[in-house]
Amino acid sequence: MKSFLIRIFAVMVVSCMVKVSGAQTTTSNDASVNIITPLTLTQLTALNFGDISVNIGSGSSAGTCIMGTDGVRTPSEGVTCLATDGGTNASYSLSGKAGTQYTIIGLPSTVTVYLDGDSGSSSTLSIGDLTTSTTNNGSGSSSTLDSNGADGIVLGGTLTLPAGSITAGTYNGTFEITVAYN
Image (tube, rainbow, N blue to C red; front, side, top):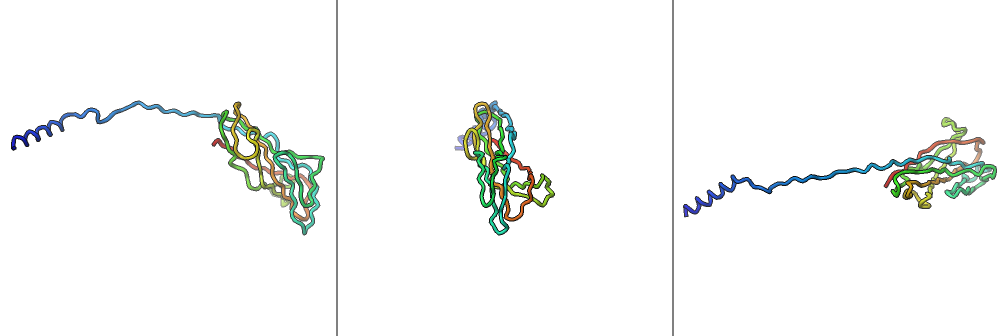
C-alpha cells in the first residue's frame, strides 16, 4: 500500500510540472466604425403670420391666428387674416445619409416675438403649439431621408394676440429647431 501511495504522489508531482497546453488561446479580432454624413438643416422660409388686423375688446378672450402646416391661416376672436400678405410656413431642407431615420427632437414650447425685433421692448406676442410635417412622411416629427439623403420640413404654429390694446407694427423673434438621427 505504501508503494501504491508513493506512485500516486509521484504521478501528481510529475503532472504538476508538465506544462498544460490549450489552457489559453488568442485570436485576432476586427473593429470598425462607419462615420455617416452629419445632418444639415437649412431654413428656406421664415414663419410669418402675414398681415393681421386685430379688434379684440379688453374684456374678451385672447385671439389667435393658426398657421397650419398646409399654409392655411385660421383666425379666431376678433382676429382677421388679411389677403395683402398671406404669410408663410417656416420651411427647411434637411440632408444627411440616404435612407436614415431622424426625429425632430427640439422645438420650443413658446416663441416670443418683439415689436420691431427689439428684445427689450415691452410689446411682445407669443407663438406656441408649433407643429411639423415632412415631405417624405407627412405629419409628425419623425421621418426617413429619401434615397438622395433629403427631406423637407414644414412648421406651423399658433400666434396668440391678447385682449385689449396691441401696438401696431412688425414683431420679430428667433427660435431653434433640433433634428437628430434615430
